[in-house]
Image (cartoon, rainbow, N blue to C red):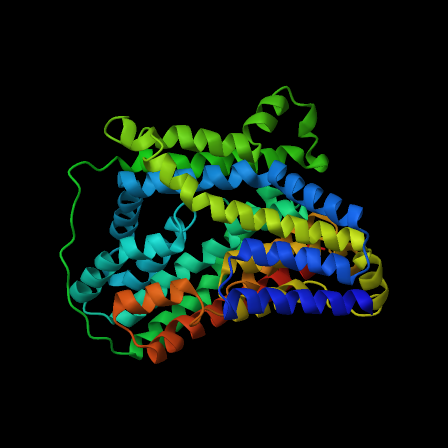
Amino acid sequence: MLYIVALLLALAFIILGIVRFGIHPFFVLLLAAIGYGFLAGMDVSTIIASINDGFGGIMGKIGLIIFFGVVIGTILEKSGGALVIANSILQWIGERSIHLAMMLTGYVLSIPVFADSAFLMMNSLNKALSHKAKVSYAGTTAALALGLTATHVMVPPTPGPIAAAGILDAPLGSVVAWGILVSLLSLSTCYLFAKKVASKIIIPYRLESIENPSHLPKLWKSMLSIVVPILLIVLKSIFDYPELGLQESSFYPIVSFLGTPMIALLIGIILTLLLPEKLDKKIYAASGWIGDSVKIAAPIILITGAGGIFGKMLQNSGMAEVITESLSDVQIGLFFPFLLAACLKTTQGSSTVALITTASIVAPILPALGLDAPFMKTMTVLAIGAGSAVVSHANDSFFWVFTELTGMNVRQGNQIQTAGTLVLGVTAMIIIFLISLIVI
């Protein structure tokens, strides 16, 4: 009982610290972990060891992976590669299917580019195309935002899912493959919501001129840095399946090396260097594009490290044994991480924080929940991702980007963004649960 009380107090502190007092999530998670350790009766040496091992262990697994993913997204955005991808998707699908076009554009862009940045980049184009096609701007905006959110919470190399996969020791190639499937299927209800529900809301808007850079990279170059790393990671995952017997192949050492997420994303960074017209200090200098990537990645890496500390503290306290006894007769499975992530997302606003914190709490109790098999770890990452979408409202920075940029009021934002993310998260969880029943 002591452990449960300590955990509840730690969670309350996390929510109040972030939401009420606006403290940086890194310090909130770190202090919550230390406070939990003392409340749970851990000795000082174990608490210190948990801090060192938790931070160092998770950084060794995914610190560079997160940073490399951010670098790819930053260069894609600043070089114009992301805009090229967006325009191409719109041309392929056509203006008559603009809701689908915007949704899939957001879906692809949010893998390498942060959802906020991608929305800022796409909004002017979305507005112009909505006007030209004579369709509801609210509907296409909902489609774009939900497409962005789907991959943001479920598909690596987006930092949140990568961090969760690393904390839970889930096979990243499997998370990528199943994440793409689940997130795409989840968009079916989101598409209907955008076209049938959100489109009924009227938003007055003013057209703005779209600036076209003098140099834009070719589409095939823009896609390389996204497609190649994902293919390498998935290929390694396929080679690693014991049932296929591919580990005896002479190609296995090469595939295993190139498909290691850190190496695959490093290759992705090298491929992004094909995008700028020329390589100069604006790209590689401390104040250049890569320098900007460091500023973006640092908070995410620190929060992930603090999540690792929290998870290690829970593990070393003996929480897993207590939960095992408590849940021995309760078949809650995947719904526990989903509901916990949803609570954290709703109360403190950040999907990334919800992903990392939930994964840190769930990691030590995976056996108790019956989720410790490799496939179920993958499903757990996706269940946490689905929960971290539920729901985006006034305490979420993306909610304000969404409303302020489009001219919506808070009520309209709740009708579109808040309701839409609820549809996305619940649909994804239903799909994840059904997949787990069929495959297991």
